[in-house]
Image (cartoon, rainbow, N blue to C red):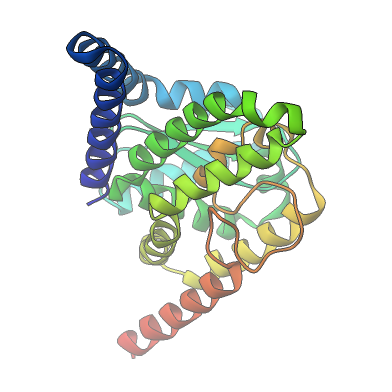
Length: 276
């Protein structure tokens, strides 16, 4: 379903480019705009994961790492991907204290999971595995492509609107507002709820994910993620909103953590009842 949504969003972008080109220069303008839109789609489809990983300074890691925590992360990613009956995504580490994670890529064969150094140092191994299961759920559902498309649109929109906001000193607010609006139009809240539930099944313990989300939410208040602040259009990719700001019941890109946790606890109760 998320693949269809991504295709729908890309079609709307294509039509919008063509329409604007037509209004500016008639048929010739529409043709040029269509070519530009096609180039945009190709870049997003083939290169979005590489661009996003570079924006966040992600470094690929493997089971040969010197760090036992990283080796455990890669091993658990292997195990969970096998349990989810899907290829294991490439694994990356981001050097930042804020605990968080995201996924990028066009499909299950071209996906990458990136977790922060802070995530490994803050969560237990079981909780890290639950977060990995959440990201695997996004990949399996096709959410990664839809989120990448929405992030690309946000980046493009902010580039266009920034010159208008700069004289007023509102560039940062415009970046966040635009990114949040596009994330909501792309149904980011529903994606997170669905990925949470699927993750509970993949890792076998919704409670571990619930505990992880509570810790992540608490630490995003006190710890800044500088690269996420510099690239707010990618905020919707993360497990919890990485951007600093007043404590929120819900952000534009993510549903309330308390509600996500409550749903996971209900899922755990359902699983216990089914096993009795």
